[in-house]
Image (tube, rainbow, N blue to C red; front, top):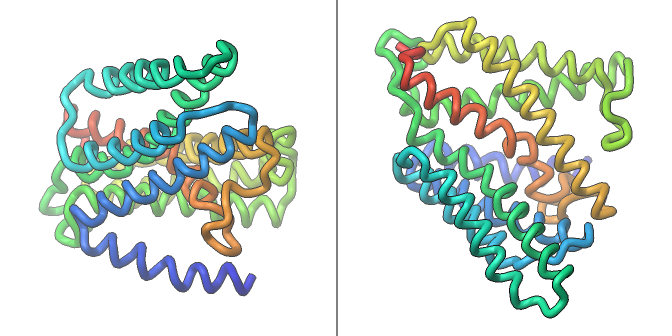
Amino acid sequence: MQQRLISAAVLVPVVVGVFLLGTPWLTLGIAAVAALAAVEVVRLLRAAGLPVTSLIVIVVPTLAALVLGSFTIPEGAGIAAVAGVLVVAAIAAFRRPDVGDGFRDWTGTSFGAVYASMLAFLAGILVVAPALPSDAPLHGWFDAGRTWLLVLVLTVWSFDSFAYLAGRTLKRGRFLNHISPNKTWSGVVGGTIAAIVVAGVLTWAAGGGPIGGFVLGLVVAVAAQAGDVAESMLKRTAGAKDSGTLIPGHGGVLDRVDSFLFAAPVMYGYLVLAGHFGWIG
């Protein structure tokens, strides 16, 4: 517990400081987190029996965060980028003298690069977020990108916190215990209710409709839980308790951001649709 408190005392001011600085520092910070998470993904995939080309797995998420956080991406560019990763990973795998190892390298490298790159949508939120209406309660606090990034962070944190509290208190019904033995249905339900309420209130405060916010909270809760369980699946396959040891008392970087791997694309997609259909304002 002491290690956890010390780590939090060091990390929280850094995270808050980078958030307050805004772009480009916030984009650079997200890119750094994506790179560190990718290093841990490489380690886990190798422990799980998949040889990977580490350079590709680490560079792709870093570049993805820098690009998504700096430019408005043309339609279809994302699909082309994924296709490019598949092609480059295949070419890199050709060097393996054993065909089976080459195929596993191609598979592991492609998966690892795309998986870690999902964090880049955190940076993308800073670019695609539509402007907040002048009468929105949160207008003027931060720019639109940081406001919606904060909505996502608080929604995911509320889900994680209340899922933990409800699960510890009620302890009802095992949830996917073949992957993550400590999870319960009571935790999932408690966390989901919290996420729906928080997202609904914050979406209204950001100028969106509360009903849309409630739906957003539900989808973010499902995505956050899926991201956590997916990382647990990877760790169990690799025979690892934590993704790394970089954060004393907390495990690795991937352990701290696993929920955001799936939740960030959800928020990004919501904001793209909100800007297109005028849901905010």
